[in-house]
Amino acid sequence: MPAQWTGEIIGEMHIHGITGKQLAAEANINEKYLSAILNGHREPKGAEERLRAALARLCASKDN
Image (cartoon, rainbow, N blue to C red; front, side, top):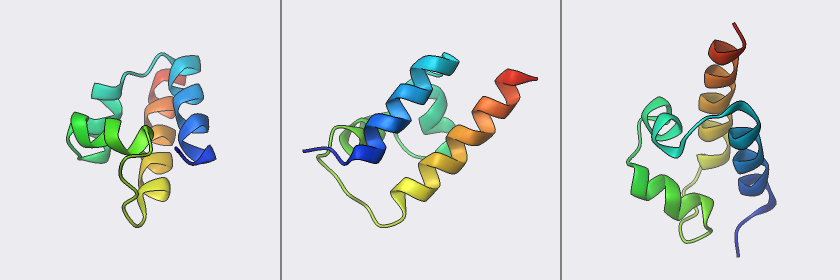
């Protein structure tokens, strides 16, 4: 089962129109690996912080 934070990330992606491809590129990870993380199939250490930081950068660039 995915962690709650993954749902929050996905929600923010939808709100800001950010694709998985964009988030994966910003976080410097493979798209399929990002999908596995967001779907709860992988739980790498530090993933939440890394993805939240990448998402924040993308949101900031979209808001400007």
